[in-house]
Image 1 (cartoon, helix red, strand yellow):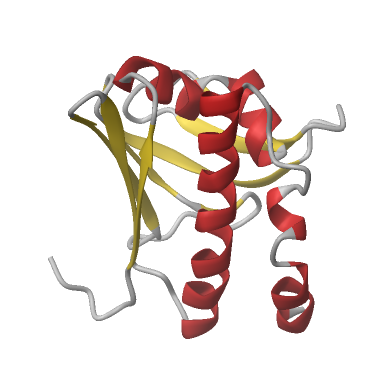
Image 2 (cartoon, rainbow, N blue to C red; image 1 turned 180 degrees about the vertical axis):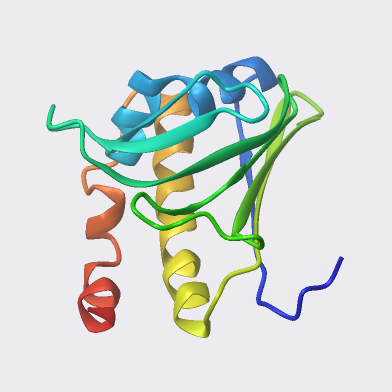
Length: 159
């Protein structure tokens, strides 16, 4: 369904199994390692998820509702500021994990973005986060810069 709001799609290929990529998307400790925020949820349709800081404060900077969970191939969730009131038409992120020969194709689709500025932010954010995920799964180490440092100048200009 076309909402008239912008969409962002990012595709990457990862030398890993679908199960390992799924684990990296849904395990709080792994998301904390490559995203700099722990994604915490029961990962069941209808459950809440929170994008919690890794500093131990328990502060969530984003969150939403889990819409669809089909391990290890498809995860759909709403994505918004943690303190935002639920809307009838929220931004939604879909992770599609597909075997591709002996690697995985990971497609991130972020739909219903409210503004062009939101598109600009996710266009910088998703590649940085997914590059860090890819590095962690393929080498065992995250990149030397945190994802938010890779586009700090853009975030600073937005604030």
